[in-house]
Image (tube, rainbow, N blue to C red; front, side, top):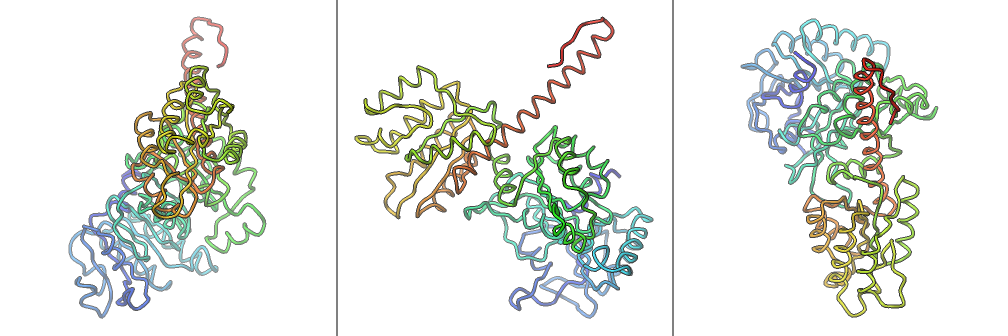
Length: 490
């Protein structure tokens, strides 16, 4: 079987054995994998494995996995360290080909733990089985309603087409990540490779690359086991969909923390930076940037050019956005003379109209949301405008003068250009939730973050254009070598 087929056993299991499941529930303040899985709405067959228990949470329990009936796709193992290796042997005997080992204390710990981890891998590979972990929360797949995490989940109202890969809980956190302003969406898939004793980042990345339900991939990297294979898989992945990476352990302090956390070898940060750039991966600096860009790529259409229009009720915020454009490889769109003429008809004669567009002076005699819609149509119809960033101020409940929410949704649906918004004010969470409901607008808590997200879209578009030009050059060069054509690299 291929790596992708192996990964499907983890991400899309038809049946699962939960070995070492707790009899306690969240009512007792306990973390219970079985309870979390039932709450998440998993439709497959579940076999709780717990010696001395006949039933747990309404499901028949079995004293060992070998006594459970039928074929089992996946085993989730959460038993004390010394019991893990015997349990892996039982799973192999049962014919289980995929195992998630939650237990800690292996490659991330002492010499005995490292030896146990090596033997565990040897036993699994001898039977053609694969392991995620140890020291992991496992996986989450909102599409199949499966999760091996022991944190309580609820069925997602909406799913972001995102895939997250991380180590020791971080991928699960990102997979469960609700969008920043309290909006009930959930990241679609998360894979926590833990110590990566067998399944590693490259395996998970290969699965998500070919996954039609994943539009953008985000990585949390502590260290990489097989650098050459990782580069190869990542390079192929970035050709098809954006890949983001948050590399941690970049300082001496961080490197020591990684070594004690998952036992990973970190390597020099400059080397990772060059490798990620070579593979076409967009590197981010922190969790907020990772979340911001993942949302932008998941929600917005591709950005065809770097020219941005800024619409704001406050001129100073427009200046902030202009500075951010310069910092993130974008430019303020040069509005055409026809666009400028149409805008002047809406504004006072004393006002100098330009980009950023300060909409407020045009609302002296016309409701703000109405004139905002008019200005937005004029600007977005300009062929010089590739994207727009809008500022939305929200006041107290019942006062919606400055809230052109329906108008923004209409503009996003009508013009199909990337649109981000900086939303602020007392009703910020509700307004942001309303704007993002359509799945066409990405909202952010600052104008800089809203522009930065557009900059990432453009950065990826430039990368894709360079790839296309290089591929075209290679094809023409190969053809021309037979006919002695003189070629100039694009």
